Length: 287
DNA sequence: TTCCAGGAGAGAG
DNA sequence: CTCTCTCATGGA
Image (cartoon, rainbow, N blue to C red; front, top):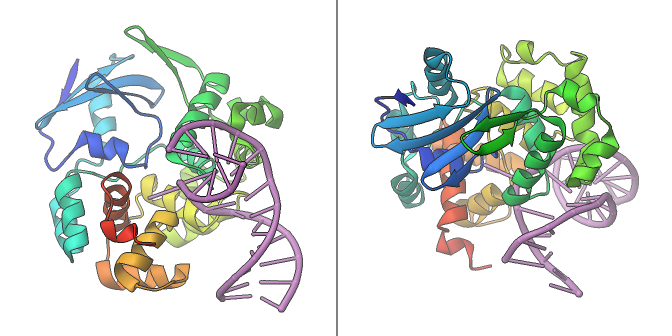
């Protein structure tokens, strides 16, 4: 057992349940997930994270990894103060306080959000679990076994049809193509991490199956670009029905978020998104 | 049974 | 530039 403390302004439940990461499962008060090729179980007691890992040979490294993974060094209260402009945001922050935007593994995040298009969170998680079982490596902790998210080469060693059999639908070829491009380093993910949001987004969108929204998700959830704004059906609904009171283009929604919420629109978006999906704004129902 | 989901691509206008 | 249609899948 490894402890990480003190963690302030952090809520493990909201952070892992808000739709940014797809590999965590809650059971009996613990969250189980595969990260960094390890199977972890984590729970939070006040300002302490209790962590068990399938590999505890280097606890310091694990502590540092998770500190960065959950972005625990960031001053969250300052961000929340800056975006807390109205009652919608205020109630979202009140309910979801401590939810942080994570720094996820780039390839896993990229591959996962390719599968997210025209899809729902439950099935995205199912598809990722399926391809991990099919292509990944097994890891065990206690009586549990889970599987690593397959590296690009592990996918290209298989076939598109093998991906299709995992129930990915038309997304199978997108993921296979992305795996090939990354494996052959036509897109260098290490280089990508050092690039600006604009460059990163442009490079991501050069892959088939990655458009504006998925590129924004990868930039926000994995590359630390807090100015990224993923506009999905929920964010569109929120912008059009709660704020603008009219139909709006993606360009207009982006402009509104930027002008209204300022620098941290990624955080603004995530708090409204998570609150709308779990609790729900009653104004969103009247249509 | 039809509708919907953290959309993207292709084509038309 | 903005619409519109299509693309698999499964849970509601």
